[in-house]
Length: 302
Image (tube, rainbow, N blue to C red; front, side, top):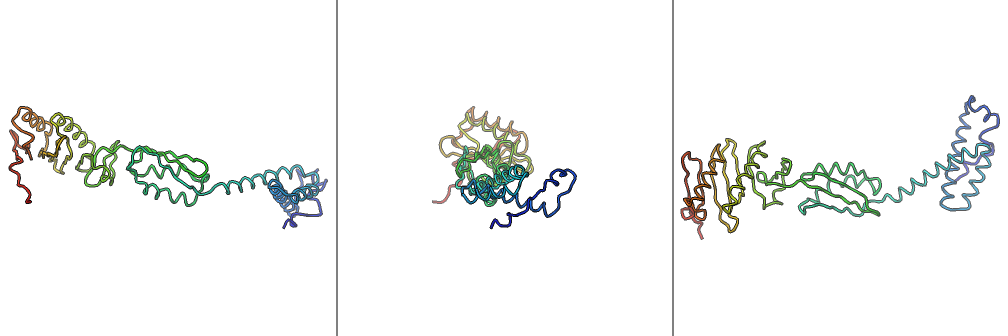
């Protein structure tokens, strides 16, 4: 199979070497030189792999090369080394055996991560995987703020994820995360978070309002579990007792929410209202409020 690289006539004559800078090489001789380089490269690759036949082939090719042997030998060495490294790289670039996810939360959707990375894994191996492309794919997922990837020999990929912090459930299915990011889904993973409902663009303001109400109601033994702002600005708040299952609903109306909440808290602290007896409080009245007690609420049929 190596016969095509063995030729009886030398590739370069002395006259041609002396005038090499001016005389243009004939196409046939150029092809012969290229063939000889390939032959030398193949012989060197075989020699590195081990074999007496490869050594004999290398000696014959060097004799035929004559004065050009050092140059051709260097070129063949480089080419053979490149082919050997490429072969070794192909052998070592095996598919990934395992992907390890490192994150601060257990609510990461591993199936979603796998779906994003699967196309890259299908066309890449351990060494050829584009880590930057994989990082960009992961950072485009909801709740992932930053991703870093590193290889661990022999076939493992370690993926570290920094997550956005979920602050509240938004709407029926979404999430409001740190940085004001609104996610279309994920609420089912965080049932313990308060629920905020409001018009598009009101996320940050409504969350700040929730924080203020939470700070005001905590001393009374209540925690805000739901805050709603309707399109026209009317507000409704649901608070739950920190101990027990008591729930109080507050109708805030439009505007002056803080003043209305302060008036409600004042009457509670003065003893005019008993939280244990309250079911609903309507704070929309200018000079007072309406109360529905637990006793007045219709009870469910047994």
